[in-house]
Length: 303
Image (cartoon, rainbow, N blue to C red; front, side):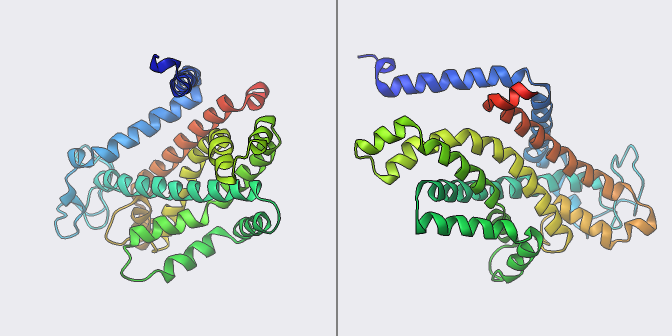
């Protein structure tokens, strides 16, 4: 029997067809494609950083440029107070900012999805306890909690790992809330009732029936959470809680602030890393809104 006629083959064919239809619809969305182009540009810069700028330009002892030079042909983004090219800093800073944003979002999505599905599926004490935990994280202000967690990490844990864990652990509650509400709707559908009647256990119900139906929501929310994680990394680095040995956009802004950028009028020192943060966040938000419109027909009908 041909593989395409088997149940798994049919499922794979349907998934390929769904992905192809999704991409065709996404390509017609101007906002989504604009965001995708922005993200592709920054992803290329981050991956090709060793080819675009010499890493030695990050060193304070090897800086040979003029101090606080305005943007010019030789230094398109100007220089900082140490004589380092701001363009080199922005290029290499994109690696850490995007890495922290994506890794922290992965942690946040896993925790939020697991807690959301479990709190929506289980009734009674277990579901109630998970829901109270989610509400606690929603009520506690993000920044004070992140600062406290960032300062209590053991000194032997790399700072970049600590920042990723802190952002991931403090930003999952919104995803859990959305997933939980979706699970309530899925739990009432006939196929789930048939699965329970046929003896399907809790794990099979959640993994085989609930999880695939909430994944579109999780995917759409992921693109929005990445932008929040990047802003969080920028904020923590600006407050001096990031990795002092690695350059990120937040670290550049922190150095500019401590270097009296306002009194010296060195606008380029904060403008270019700040604009990079804004453009990346804009790109993720545009992609997230486009994905949400495609996956949710109710939103599409109101646009």
